[in-house]
Length: 103
Image (cartoon, rainbow, N blue to C red):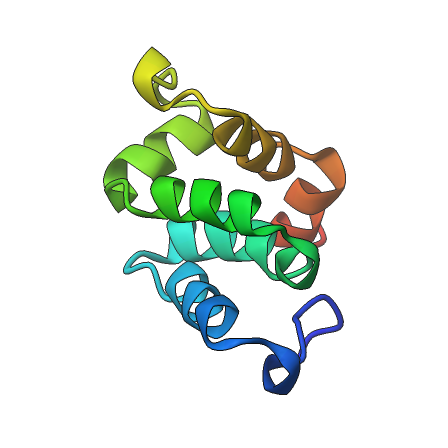
């Protein structure tokens, strides 16, 4: 288990389900973008934050990948604080360097 991944044995059923959905989105790009945001934060999220996260995760992978990578702008109807937090994480220079690896 990676250092930033939660201890699944300590999570309630909802958080385990969210973790699985975040890490197994269907495309590698969204697994990295969504899963990488969720893993280190999941244990500390409130019920309201979990609700907001699930709303984002219900969106189509192709759209999420395009919005979070900057290929397309995020539409106003899904431009929520949770989407902005995931976008900020996806564009964090340290995270991008870790994903890309050494040059």
